[in-house]
Amino acid sequence: MTMAKKRNIKRIAVWLVVVSMMSTGCASKTENQSRQQGVQMQQILTPPQTHIDNRIQIADAAAEKIVRINRVKQANVLVTGRNAYVAVIVDTPQNQLSRDLEAQIAQQVRSTDPNIQNVYISANPEFVDRITSYVTDVRQGRPVSGFYEQFTEIVQRLFPKAR
Image (spheres, rainbow, N blue to C red):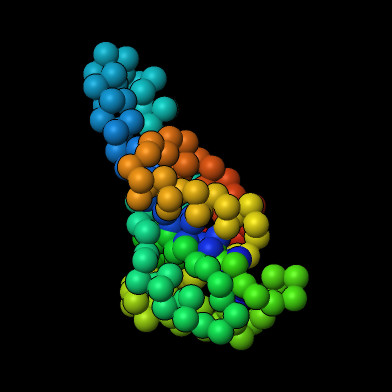
């Protein structure tokens, strides 16, 4: 797996954490409004069905292990439920991830959290950038509104078979 994919997944994890934090705030606001508006609010609260849990965690321990792998330059890992999303930058021809590199990355992620069932890895520059930005913003205390929706969209595009 390429480093870019690792970074991408790490960025996704960070974005997921931020989105989940923001969703919690929105949910409480929506709950107050639902008392006044009734059924209409239930429609707003119903999220689209995806394989992505709305609680996003940044998995720094996994990212640290991943960057120790030969050819991995940078990694960010976001965890939602039993899924890990790794955004990586790798030092390989055309930033491609080999199956062997992907297997090594997945092994390192699972070694930090045995509850992880699925590891999705990408070196896609857009994915890497979004996840890296998310992680950076969270660490600097910046608001990350809209991240969850962006994260869900890019994950569904990059990993269409993910369940």
